[in-house]
Length: 185
Image 1: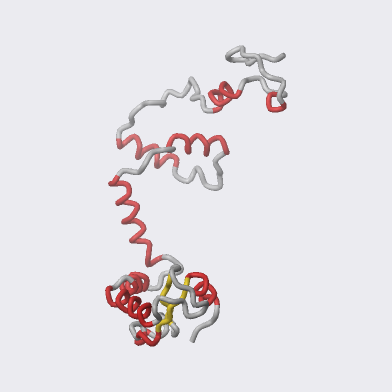
Image 2 (image 1 turned 90 degrees about the horizontal axis):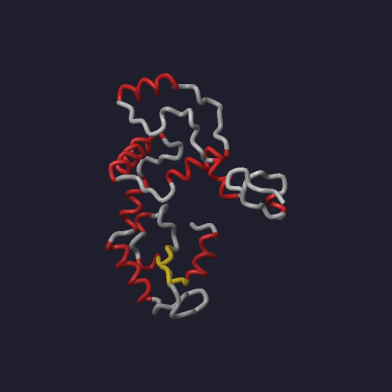
């Protein structure tokens, strides 16, 4: 029987311990151990020192990938922690500045589209279409299921028909999913 190098526990003869020298708990401690010669552990640096170190390390990490144990260690440090409100606001501001540079940017079309789709007029149009069709799916004639208002002529291509009740059709979710796959006028 083998024993662990650190805690002297006897290792089982299971397949996972074959050829190992430590038990699983000691192996994890060894894996994430901070080197004894690391004099910077726990030390607080001034802003000037951090900037100096940052400039010295600039460009040194190009082409290098973190090893698996480094990624696991960094993940374990951040696990269960949330960004502060200030950090979240900085990330949001950064994303807002990058919008125009994104390859798929369409000039803020989404905001206008979202505003229209969430408007009171669309909600009234939807209820009017449901009432006209007696809250029944017009494909399968089901009642009492989840209903969706479908634009017969495309919402995007025909903005003048967005609020026309005769351009609406009441469909249940499965029927609406099928009609979404078909090309529309």
